[in-house]
Length: 295
Image 1: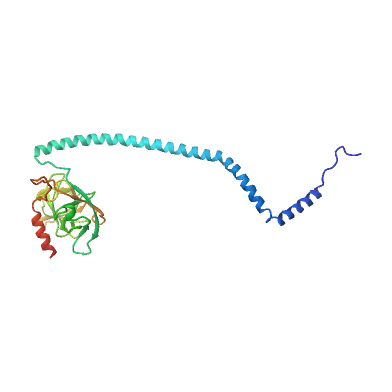
Image 2 (image 1 turned 180 degrees about the vertical axis):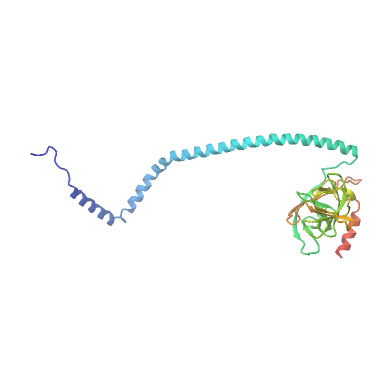
């Protein structure tokens, strides 16, 4: 009985045809390279079109993430703004109260004095002297005895001035001394350098003096060399030996004297008759002392 549908191509023929085509493609592989390049060039636009949905999804996700991040940052900044506004209100109240108290005491503080930022050019190589050289000199109005501070507190004072540079003696130098007071009880003391960058010594402190570890020392303004109220050091140790007449008090400078780079030169707000800023009293003596020390 004959089948209704005729048999198709046999499997053996299909296999033979596939083998022959494979051999032909292997042999003609190098010759088909230009054809493949042409097809690839023709299909490149289609690849870009096919990637559009994925790129749009990525862009949308990135935009949404950025939007969420900005919203969170904005919310956090608003919260900080409210906190800072509240703190600013309290500071404004304290400032007004401080102004009234200073008016009663007759000791006004002028915060609008001239200031100039200077960069450290050189650090002393002499192990017995501790000073730095700044890139401002007499041409910028720098004078001997001028106070120098950084972001944390008092650094020292100018002891030598040239046309373009100036030398600053650090607080820690053994020849340097600064009048200070304790903010907790207004006890006035003198802080001297010990030759160690992170150590000051308070000399001639009576054993009965109310001095505690952790007390903050600020410039007292005595001597009219350093302006009043600038942070100087914090007391680290207090030893009261029965065999000594005075207590041994060691403080640590707040300024990072071992890694200073930018400093602030302060000009006193004392005006002469012609309205120009002039150095404080005692500058002539400081000039003579600095000249004698350098000889």
